[in-house]
Image (tube, one colour):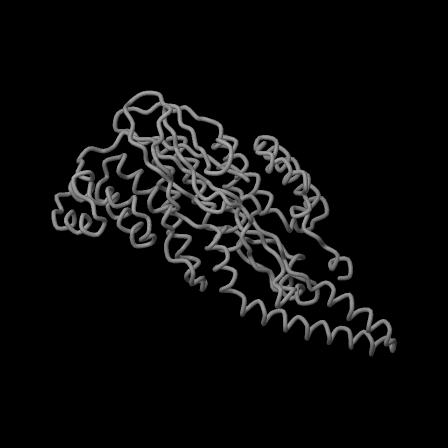
Length: 402
């Protein structure tokens, strides 16, 4: 027990991964994280112990592969993370009871609720960029299923995911599945009403379906008229822009043994998309990861406080029992001191997430196009080229790291 109180997260202490990621060397960051994961996994297997930070390594490894353009490999690692979370989503009674004496850092990290959902969101992104429409739709539908599982477990902050819904709508439209596309666009509007870019999509598909009353409704609600009246499925580039760094966990000032999420300081909020040298607009936020993370953790704070209070009682009883059995007040006091010192906030989280996910649909002519993304207030991101066929939606993903 005394050894366990000194347990510190290996992933949190991995400065080399942070350095490589901060330098935007995503390939080397992925290679380093993959190597460390395999080393630590082997150590845990040889000692028949737990690999407490396994999920953390998998998530950061997978997202680095995504940023490096290794989308197939990224999904392979995300599949391992998904199995870790959903195929083994439990904490043993012994492990849970043990944290009353030690701390949350000593148990296997299972992920925050929003992190679990983002696994399937990122798998959908990877498949969409690869042009694997059916696989991407499977992952988008899995997001709804996962949300339902969390809701049954009492996660009240989750109802739907607007980003996954919108990507699903784009994919359905690219396959001429108009009813499904319309349902997802409408759901996107319900979930993220401030996302005005969905207005032309709703009007376009409602016209396809001959729903004149719906066309008039959306025209009035979004203030759109002729510019949205197109019946053709767009030939387009869909730019996914992953902006900034997600929030970080720090101890709560009012309860130091509990964590809270705080925003990372970075002034970049928007980016300009340039296609073939011509500015085509700015992506709009469709999923605010930062706000979701803060809300998700704050909703659990009452239960976390209750557990900490119970832990303090258990620690005091243990110290008194040691003092009684040894008839040594100094040993009892030392035990009390060590146990209280072990009660540290668990600051583990998916470190390399962006602050938010943004999207922009850019109509283009069939052919090869060069796409650049220029974060406002920061250096331009590496350009990407893509070939688009008539009636096709091609996805590109960009990541800005401050």
